[in-house]
Length: 220
Image (tube, rainbow, N blue to C red):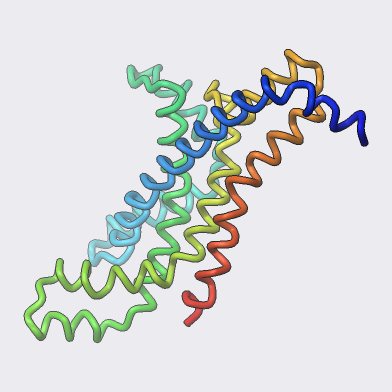
């Protein structure tokens, strides 16, 4: 046990700054991608409820396809495939877009379920007292949808955080890629990858606790 811990003591001054910087990049990547997926997901959910059948079916196909295609394939398509038609993104931007497009499908289904849970009478009542359709949605419907969806949305964010490790395969310098470089330099892969796992846990654990905090509220 002492032999396992000793490298952490010996290299703490070198490893800690590298891991903290990588944690910051991983957190920034995950938060940026999730924020974008919330916007995309809400738009997709609204389109699923439209009366335009062609649009509704197109969005339904996208949601099904995005949930069925591996995330790594989406990342490779954006980073390596799109330059073939003249569209180029840096690795970090490509990772944000790939994660957002993939997880927007999951977010859309969560928002759609929340929208379906709101009685239509609430919208009608809001319109009857003089609210515009926009006010009815933003002031009456959307806050309730967010309250219903917040616990599963937090769980989805944790899933996105863990899947962000795949961004290392398109050269994003996040936790996994940093850990791989450190393991190559110090020849201590066991200790380094354990440290990387602990870093992911430290980011994800508070959100897991938060989702449990909101779960009873969402259930009500």
